[in-house]
Image 1 (cartoon, rainbow, N blue to C red):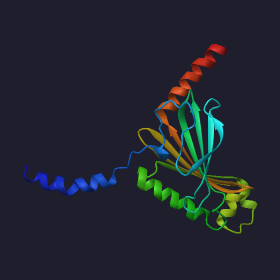
Image 2: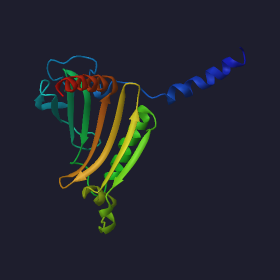
Image 3: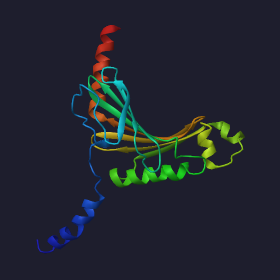
Length: 193
């Protein structure tokens, strides 16, 4: 026991610091049934309704110098997913990869290393003359997804672009609520078919 105690004392801080933090994404109440759109600090309700299934908020301040928006999706008044959209203001053809790497770094620190990263490209990229690496993103021919999994949520950060600009979209999916919603919908549709 005397030999084990110093090892426990030595390794305990290392184990504690490497364990990802389990917090409620975006500070939202995921277990609660919502009768009205929840209030979110630093966001203003833009439009939507719980009964409609989607509520959209616009940010009143920037994150990482990027414009922000949050979209919440509900099923039977329960929050099933939330999407934080960063951009297009603040992301351009010269800093998109730097901004995306910063987001990935923050999420790696918060949730542990990502479990999957995939890059989707369109073959048209071979024919395009590039001014910068981010031009591929703006053209819509390049997209990158990074995925984290916790015991309660799947988190997907995606960088993509279109003619309007470049976006970093972070989707938080509640695993339990989404599974229940999918099962309820399957039962409903099987009765209708």
